[in-house]
Length: 210
Image 1 (tube, rainbow, N blue to C red):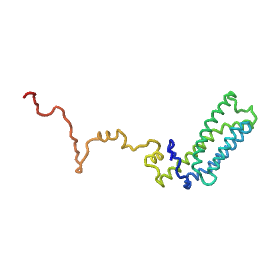
Image 2: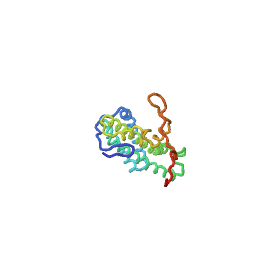
Image 3: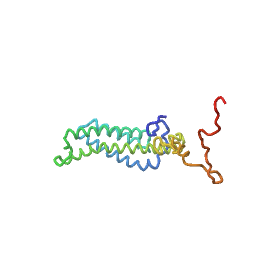
């Protein structure tokens, strides 16, 4: 079992049925894949064959992960692929915009050129949205699986629920000091119990040699 940053776990049983949240997100993920196919077509039109091929390959991985239920292992891989592709494609689109001196879309271009370039601009955004959706579905699956089977420790489970490094307030370093400075405690009778105080230089004086 491998733990990734943010609480992702690889190597556990993914044969559990999908959660209700995953079933609600499944149609939206299919919509993301359809939009990515449109982006792939736009790339093929502008002769970006490798870019279009990788987008189609990503869509095929997504379709395989949702073909029979939801395969969480493939969905996690898809989230990583979509996130990396969104970063790389953003730099590619930015370089095209810089080369065109800001005249990437405009009225002086034919409508189909504007449509193709709009699809290119929307590509990284769609990929980033798809990556976030896949990640949230996978994280919800791991959280529900841990609640049912208890294969995660309480510390890791608390991180999945409330974020990384979530600690109970009473365990903080200053908690004990605040309790100590809160004031005198009270006994069963309701009267305040004063804590013993240390007083320096109090007592009988003894001289050396006496």
